[in-house]
Structures are given as C-alpha cells and as structure tokens.
Amino acid sequence: MSTMPVLPLSYKVPNDPGPREELLEGLKKIASQAFTTYSDAFTNALTPFDRELYAWVAKAHPYSPKDWYRDPHDIIVVSAMQRIVASEDLPSWLITAAILHDRGYAILASNNDQTARDYQQRDGAHWENVDTRLLHSRLSAELGREWVVKHLRGSGEKIPLCADTETFLTVIEKHDHPLIGKYEELPPMGRHHFDADSLFSISLLSFIKDWLSYCADEKKLVKARGAGICEMGEVLSPNALLQARIARYYKEDSDLPDGWNCIETPLNPRALSFTEGGRCYPPHSQTAQGLTDIFFQGISRCCALLAEEESVTEFLTKVEPMIMAQFDLLMDMQPRI
Ligand SMILES: [Fe+2]
Ligand SMILES: [Fe+2]
Image 1 (spheres, rainbow, N blue to C red):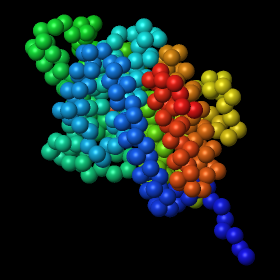
Image 2 (cartoon, rainbow, N blue to C red; image 1 turned 90 degrees about the vertical axis):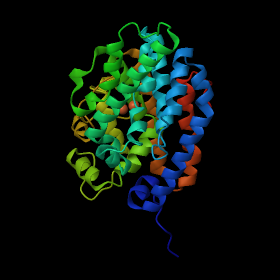
Image 3 (cartoon, rainbow, N blue to C red; image 1 turned 135 degrees about the vertical axis):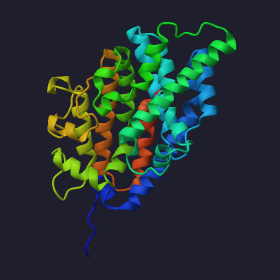
Image 4 (cartoon, protein in one colour; image 1 turned 180 degrees about the horizontal axis):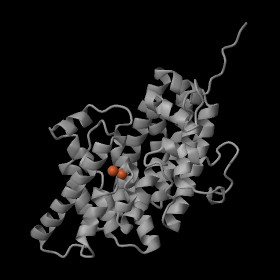
C-alpha cells in the first residue's frame, strides 16, 4: 500500500490555489477579529484630539473591504508610533501623522479618475505600484490639511500640531518615499514614522499576506530568482521571503536578533534586490530596533510552522494566538502566549 507524500504548507500553498485561498480567507478572518478585539483599547489609548480625528477619518473615509488589512495595519502602526514617541521622547504629532498616513487609500478606492479606477481593479501586490504609493500619501496629506483647517475653525482651540504643521504634513506626504528610492526627501522625523510603518510589513499578518500574494505572482518569482533567494523551478518559500525581509532591516550579522539561525536564514545583501527601495534601512531608535527584533523572531517561528504543518486549519489555529500576541505587545496588554 502506497502512502501519499507529506507536503508542508510552505510547498503546497505556492503550488496549489486551493490551500492558498483557504489560508487567505482564514487570515482575513483573523484580521477582522483582531480589529474587533483591539479597537476599543486602541481608541482609548489615544489623546482626545487624536480620538476625535480617528473617529472622523474612519467615518468619513472607511477603507474598502478589498483592503481588509488596512484597519489592523493602522492599529499596529499607530500603537508602534505611540511606544516609539513615549520611549524616545519625540513629538506627539507623529501619532497624529500615523493615524492619517494611509487614509488616502480609502479616498483612492472611492474616487473616479483613471488612477483610482486602476487601483479599484487591483490584484496581487498592488500596494507596490509607484503611482499608488505617491497618490495615496498625497491624498492623506490633503486630508491632514483639511483636518488642521477644520479643527482651527471648528473649535478655535490650539491644536497640538503647533510644533510644525508643515513638517507634519510633509511626513505624511513623503512617508513612502524610501520605498520608491527617494529616502533623502524624507524629513528626519519621518524616519521614525517609517520605522513604525515598517513594523507592519514584518508583522505576522502582513508577512503571511505578502507571501500569499508573492508566491502566486510569476513576476515576483523571476525577481526572487534574480535576487538569489529562489532557485530556478523552485517556489517562493516563506524562508526566502524572510531572507529578503531580514536584508532590508539588518546590515551586519552582529546586528541580527538574539539567537538568530544564520544557517537557515543567512544575511544575504543580494536579497535586497527583491525588496521595495532595494536598500537596507535599519531602525532609527532603540525602541524600534527592539520591536523589530521581536517581530522577526515571530516570522521565524511562523516560517518553521509553515515548513512542518500540512493542514491550513491546524496552521491557522496555531498562528492566530501568535498574531494576537503582537497586538498585545504593541498595546501593552498582557500577552496571550
Ligand atoms: Fe502608505
Ligand atoms: Fe502604512
């Protein structure tokens, strides 16, 4: 009697749309559950000014259901920004900027011009499109300006942006510039925003989402082969994507998180050509570095799980508390695991 070969998800998912879609649906459910679970704690942690802003943008410009990860993305980025601001003694308007920075995506999803229509037709890793990168951040900055004017007119109160409103708007408008090769145009404060925003791409939620999107994309496979993270005829494994990510955040072997397995996931600068911006951007503060190290440990555990699990359901059951623990960590709540 012959037995069927045991195939782990790291192999099955890139080769078979069935488990891929099942995993994506499961991930969407976890994302929505995370948003429901953490919404109250998230808004309660904001200042009254930021809470009012968040309520306003969320109501006036809700994200499209196609952008299922955007609401949890904002919770992760804003909470990370809060921690960085508090520990590094930075201006609190960085938190306001974090609330606004990607709302342009919601406007883009409901506009009617050609770029908006292209965006509405989106598929695959659409967030990497340069026009979309530029446009959504400009729309977010316009929203920021609208909010500044509205608040000044409406309440007559001094808003906590007095430090430098123009810098605040520039940080929003140029927040994705490093990803399109224009790092130098980012104001110095924008680097801290970039660190908080970058934490999302190494969160488990985003890592699995990106892997699902990349491993089904022929162009990405060609790029991965060029970057030396994937051999000819091979699929894009989670570990290959981890190699590309690690090269984007760490310059030297000695900078890698404690206990990093350099044999399984070596630091390979060539892998940078797979990532947006094609450069290494180590975090700019100790706080951001600490969070980055913890998030990479999470991805590493997730890759090991994908290499041994055969069942999507089993994997989702195991990864769900790991995803929630990242929210707990950022929001200073008691971790579940
Ligand atoms: Fe963005
Ligand atoms: Fe973002």
